Amino acid sequence: MKNKNEDVTILAIESSCDETAAAVVRNGRDVLSNVISSQIAIHTLYGGVVPEIASRKHMEKINQVIEQALSDADMKLNDVDAIGVTYGPGLVGALLVGVSAAKAISFASGKPLVGVHHIEGHISANYIENKELEPPFVCLVVSGGHTHIVIVNDYGKYEVIGRTRDDAAGEAFDKVARAIGLGYPGGPKVDKIAKEGNPHAIEFPRAVIDDAPYDFSFSGLKSAVLNYINSCKMKDIPVNTADVAASFQQAVTDMLVSRAIKAVKENGMDKLAIAGGVASNSAIRAALIEQCDKNNIRFFSPSPGLCTDNAAMIGAAAYYEYMDGVRSGWDLNAVPGLKLVSR
Ligand code: KG4
Ligand code: ZN
Image (cartoon, rainbow, N blue to C red; front, side):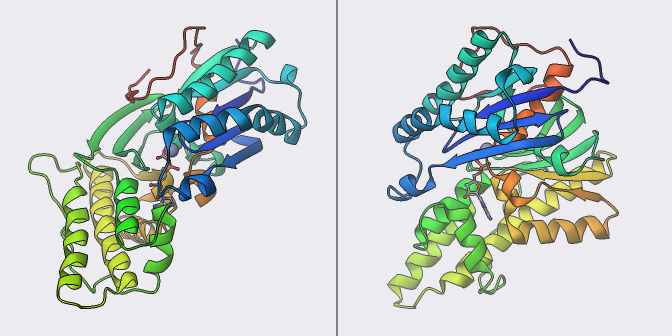
């Protein structure tokens, strides 16, 4: 094992959903390369991610993406210290492609293998551009599959204090986008069209859960949007797509921001970070910046490109796991429902 003064370089692989990605990251914070091959164009044809197609596309691209990541970093496999890979949560077939590739490379090169939790990766994306960020802090994790409020007590030490009871925030964005005819991927499209709408045009509900102040529920909001659209159609009133998008986005923003700020204040913290694809949403970022400012909370976020799935974030997380002595065996498997637990 290396000591803290020596450089540690990780080759990281991510294939949990619809991006085939590889990166080379030094000391958890310096990204030497970050290659992403997106499958969005093909899944757009079907209105969402088709798991079987995702696995097949990962298989076609994975070797190429890994080679590109090494070559962009001007490195050979021999120059890296370990192989980091996402092993869950995610689509099982998609995860298996990355895990198998990582195991093969690790076996052939004799470099240790470090399995990484995808959400730990998203949280760790914050370390890349915010060199001064250290735990403890609160992180609002908002992706296509997860909506969590996490207290990051230390590297690898997580306490999930809030979670969604139904849909994830990203899922709500995707479903509403489909309902208003924007198509897949919904989040960025809602974000864009909402800029032309009035966020106070329609009062959509903001769910509050009794006795669970940090939990979320988005299914009522999604139904309210669908009901609104249907009632417009029945009354023959044209639907103002921009107003619906902006009002929906405002409701999500209010729910996320209020709980995140409350979590920071009530847990004696002074730093808030955000993570996951939805964290790239411009309205949510603006509202968090404003509220953090008002409440004397330091706000951290990855730039939008590091919020959505990438392997650089997996390299950042793998570094802290590696330094803590974590090594995965040849029995490392894809775990679609992997829970975020502390080391
Ligand atoms: O983290 P991510 O790339 O993949 C998962 O781990 O799930 O998140 C993808 C989710 C999708 O639901 C997508 O619609 C949403 O993030 N998303 C956004 C934006 N960009 C991506 N949601 C709202 N606004 C955005 N700008
Ligand atoms: Zn993700």
